[in-house]
Image 1 (tube, rainbow, N blue to C red):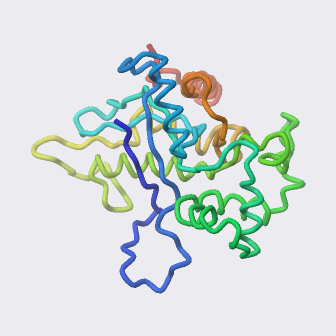
Image 2 (cartoon, rainbow, N blue to C red):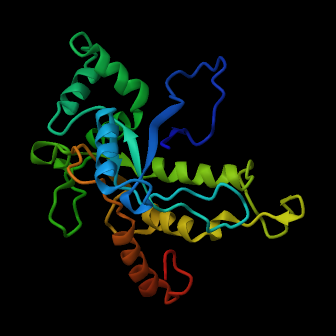
Amino acid sequence: HHHHHHGNNDDDVDNDDDDAPEAPLLRAVFAETNTPAAGDVTPSQSLLRHKSLYNLGYRLVGFPYAQPPLTTVDVNATFDDLVLLVYFPWFENDAAAGAIAKLERKERSEDEDGGLIMERYCPWFMEEQRHRCGGGNDDDDDDDDGDDDGSRGDGENSNTVQMNVNIPFGYVEDFYRSVFHCNSEECTNDDNDDTVGSERIPDYRTADYYKFAHWFAHDRPDKSKGVVEVSLRSPTMPWEDCKDRLKLEWKEWEERYHHCNNDLYGKS
C-alpha cells in the first residue's frame, strides 16, 4: 500500500482559467512506504520494495515523517513506521545540475523529456536551484559544522539535492487540516464548537507528532536552514527512518528551551 500524494501550493487553486500559468499547482509528488519496522514483510522483501520504488523514480526525503491520524478520534494516532519519498527520477552523480542549466538556457532539444518531467513533477527542485543561485550563498555559511552550503549538490556531494522544508511540512499540515475539518485559516479557537456528531474535534496542533514536525521545520537550531536533503542513492539496505535520531535531538531541545519533558512524542 503505497500512497501517492500531491503536495500542492499553500492555497489550493482551482486552475480553471486563471491567467497565472507561472504558479504551478504541483510542487512535489510524494509517496510513503513502510519501513521494516512495520513488520508486514521480511527485511529482504522490504529492501526489494524500496529498490523497486527507487527504480520507479522515488527518492528518500530526510524529513521525519509519520502518517497523521485518519480519523478525529485520537489526535495522536499516527502511523509511524514509514518514510517519505519524492518523485525525482535522477540518479546520484546524474547531470541534474546540467539538466537545470539547460532548462535555464531553454536548450531543451537534447533533454526534452527530462526537462518536461522536471518542470511538471519536480518544481521544488527548480525552486531550490533558483533560490540557491539567486541568493548570495557565499557568505551564509556561518554555522560551525564546516560544510560550505554553497557547494552542496555539486562535486562529491552530488548524491543529494535539497528541498524547501516547508513543502513536506506543508503536506503534513494539509493532511491534519483535512482530517480535522479545518477549511478556514484559523482552525480552532477556544470558543470554536467544531463538532462531528457530538464529538468535539481536538486541535491537531496539540498532537505530539505535529509538534515534532513543526520543530523540525521551524525551530531546529541552525541545522536545516530551511531545507531538507533528498538522497539520490540507490538503497543497499532498506531506507532508514530518521525519526528516532531526530526525536532524541528534539527532546534535548525541549528540555533545554522549555524545561518540560513531559508528553513528548514517542516517549515510552
